[in-house]
Image 1: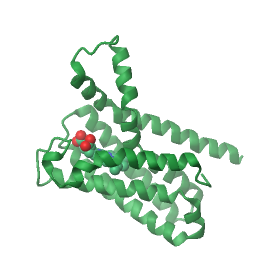
Image 2: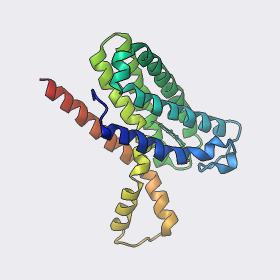
Image 3: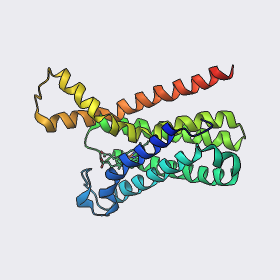
Image 4: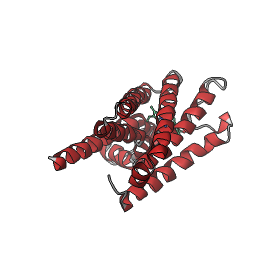
Length: 213
Ligand code: HEM
């Protein structure tokens, strides 16, 4: 991704555009506005708000890291934003483990749990490769890490497709009503996002490698 193309900017706008409305209720610092059921205002709510804030910082920082003009002309800025990305992911990802204990649904919380592990692992790998000045590997791991950051966006974007699958699976009926349909979709959308992003990212990395040989 040497020159950010138009499609890259579309991804930036869509990602921020998708996440801002989801983040809005939490910017009020009012637990009653939370979409996630809050059972603890002393631990769960502050942890959730901090997770969301830092995850958003990681999202924006991650986008900036792939802009080659910054990376090539201002390596110092690239390094600073990189540190902000790594610290945001590490704290936000750790906090996701705390949220796991407050989640209401096992299938969904397990997806978040797995996502947090791979998010932390790939980001740590990317950081270590940069420290060792192995920049080719650093890029690969950074692409993997950022692909996982984008799961939050993709999981929300693919909701209409999942709802459509649910309706067709049930022979164009809603056996448990609309609420049941949405709940079922929310149970699997993070898993679907992980699989989809993983496939796209690995395809992208493989393609890059093949083009080089
Ligand atoms: C990629 C690793 C991520 C993990 C493991 C993760 C984990 C979690 C968890 C466990 C929750 C609580 C959900 C619940 O209890 O139902 C949550 C909620 C939330 N996260 Fe993340 N998250 C990640 C990335 C992001 C990113 C990049 C953003 C972007 C800003 C984000 C924004 C949010 C928002 C807005 C909520 C509130 C959910 C809602 O109101 O529907 N997360 N996340």
